[in-house]
Image (cartoon, rainbow, N blue to C red):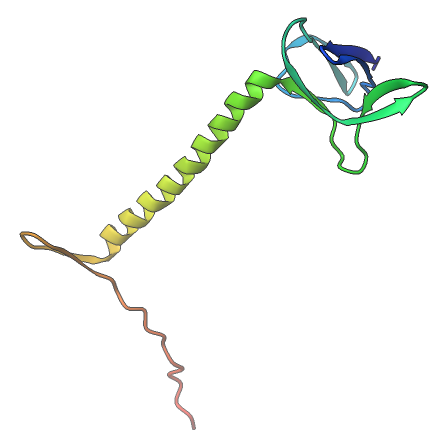
Length: 137
């Protein structure tokens, strides 16, 4: 995969695209060669992207490459990551609510509930441990 340049207000850097992971970027073209599938992604001018990697200096040039220690090197549209993070938070909260609702349903199904005029009493069954009932000879 060829390298490419990224430029912003601070300057221009070379991105060594070997082992670069693309997240949430549109696929421009897909090529198949036997079992190998290659995707060509598009980066558009004047859009914000988040690029995570390791910046190194080589021959008086700054190059961004895969960080071997942390094993990270990726690029994604910055707006897509923000909305994706919000969706993950909603999913996590929904899981907690689902567990709480399931516990309430199980309690209602398996516990004796007594409803008076102003009070609701829930009788939870006591779990008794059965001792060894074998007789000793």
